[in-house]
Length: 340
Ligand SMILES: Nc1ncnc2c1ncn2[C@@H]1O[C@H](COP(=O)(O)OP(=O)(O)OP(=O)(O)O)[C@@H](O)[C@H]1O
Image (cartoon, rainbow, N blue to C red):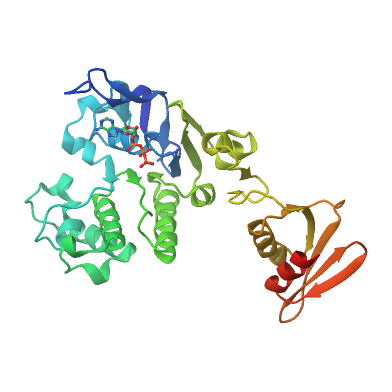
């Protein structure tokens, strides 16, 4: 099985909504989409609110018709595949709330096997193993007897991922799979998706608003810009060539390439040259930027801060107008700076 085999590919795809009812003209959300999702790859789909992430995921899943262009699943045109054939290629986790009641988590995850058994077909040994594996690997074990309508948002999210895993398709598409998860669950799900892609050669596409997570977790990014065009590449290339920040940047909201994160605060105070222990520098930088200082990594500023790691704690020395001041907390550092 070739690692880079394309599972989903599009040809001049245009996604959006056709003219209907009060909408007299069709609405194009994104166009000229020529992308491929490969085996063994985790791709993050990013874009501002309303840019078309959900519409693209629904369209690639066959739940929403394209306005024009084509989609191929494992080389066959989606139009030529039955629902059952398509559901053996692609599984999808959407953000929609569940409406079916009186259904246990175990039953819902078992529905993931329906492309192989039919809706009311009984599960054979292999099906049961897949269901058990999907439940276990998403950490949904403690939930199996619960009614799906009584799950919290985060619990439901895990269970819906389990259902998609039980479907055991070469491609898995997920719309904001980490939206309701706490940090440990988020890390666990992202690790699981990465393991699935890298160890079992699945193709994983997920949308998210967590840019930091996407930069760390994705093998490739698909960025939808405000003009409805998709730009693809490895996260690092898209950061280094400025594409990443251009998709999200607005007015004073700046991407900092040196830290890989967006600056929340506009500098309003004087620049500080910060140096020293890397862990100390990382956390000191946050506090300084939050307090309005511009942190520089090269000398030549009047204010200078050095962080030293001692055995049990950190120490900060502040140099200003040839005088040195010392602190053993970040809070102390900030109050010294305020008085200077
Ligand atoms: N049924 C609909 N009819 C017409 N336009 C729609 C419909 N559903 C969504 N849209 C519009 O399509 C565009 C893309 O929506 P979509 O939900 O795909 O964006 P998104 O990137 O997932 O957004 P978000 O990040 O806010 O979840 C938006 O402008 C939205 O208002």
